[in-house]
Image 1 (spheres, helix red, strand yellow):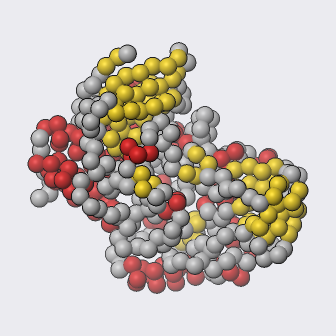
Image 2: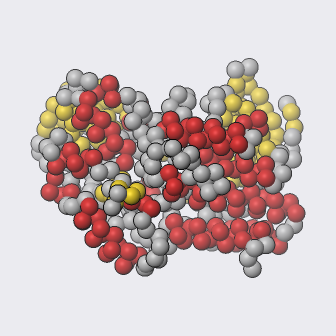
Image 3: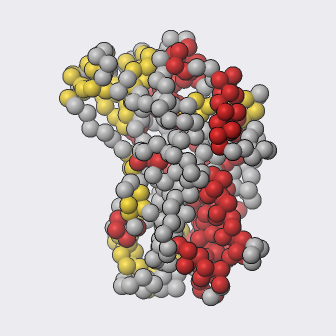
Length: 438
């Protein structure tokens, strides 16, 4: 067993892992990266062993609001890039910052266990084509993503057709000659339903609750590029944005969509105009929640029923860090309870990167999270007063940076933050750690 106790272990080579790797290199902090796939890109590499991507997937945010600030996407990239463009982007990023040589690819991390008290280091066991290996490290940076373990609900009864999770969906040909029911109307569910409309016999969409819909384009420009010039209080922002949505989206309820039981921005909106277009044309039928299965018949909670050949559950994903005990992550409720969604309150040798969602956060917001963590690690090693102050702050009681937003009580919202509140807090600490702020 090799011992490199002065180095950190970085798990994952998706966008969050790449951002952390770049920053570690800039700060001259030694690390060893581990990635199950044969290359970088995370879930954006559709050929990766645990990718949940599908052929027609595109970003739901525009490239200018998503890209890393110091590594813009190519000018010829689409305004809403496909997964293939995103994979190339992350490959180019890794090449530009000379990141890949610091990773072990094809390496599946099996376990991470502390060697003793906090600060004594971690033993990492991984498996590759040559077998199992172990190595000791000074600390862990976990960046394995949040969208790889399917959240597959249980249903009453048995369905005799094809029952799959959206993670098993790859190509619209899977819908050929089939009557399709998509369960769940989040962004992926709506995207996949549009595929089923074009390639299947029919498509219905089952929804437990209503959603707020946002068009991809407003006045001919990506919708997410229009805001931000004027900062409005949330109550006023809801009024203004609500009026804009009525102009460009209309009233989804007239197509059969249920009315949302929460306010705008209390959950992630659905960025999809096509599903409303097809609903208005009668190409899709909106159904309520499912009561039970019986053969190929699906019974809904309003007493109606219909027959299907395929049921696809677009029911999201569960946070999953299978190589480390949940207790070590200060898990509370549906997610680890970490300061600014990444820092353990007691440990300075364990960080979870990328466990953060916010409308409009983009890769740059996540890059800032990684920068705060990396500069904190460097500051602790150098005895910087700002790092000591952050260490004290994160060890005290803290709450998630929601900015007072009353997010809906769902597991997928357990690590949701308010973008402005979150980035302000993270940037403040970066300023202190770099000496650019008091």
